[in-house]
Image (cartoon, rainbow, N blue to C red; front, top):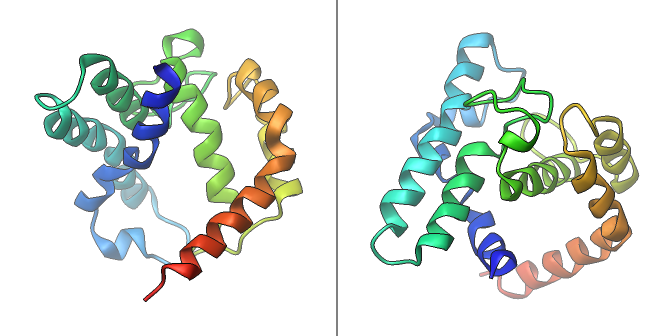
Length: 165
C-alpha cells in the first residue's frame, strides 16, 4: 500500500509550482536570492494543494503520503533543506525517497538553464551527497537499481514520442 501510494503521489510533488511566476521558473540563468526564496515556497504550496484536492476523495493514508512528498521533498538529511529544516528521521520516509528521485531526474533532464548530465554524473553526485543531502539508506537502496534507470528513461521517451500529437 505504501509503495502504491508513493508511486501515485510522486507526480504531484511539484504541483505548487503553478503558483510561481513563469519568469522565475523559466529563467535561463542563476536565480538571485529573492527568486530562490520564491521558488522555495512551492513545496509548502504543493502540500496545501495536494491536501485540498485529495482530502475528501482519497484514503487518509494516501493523502498523508502525498502531502508529505509534496511538502518535504526538499528537506535535507543534515537539516539545511526547506520548508521546515527537518533533519534525519524527522523527514518522512516517503519524502526522503522522493528527494533522491527528484534530484536524479533534475540532473539527467535538460532544463532551460542547464544541459542534462549523464547518468554516471548524476549517480556520483547523489553518492557524494549521501549523509548530507540524502538519507544514506535511501541512497544505498537507489544504487541497487540505479543502472536500470537509463533504459527506463529511454522507454519513457519512446512512449512520449509514440503519443505525441
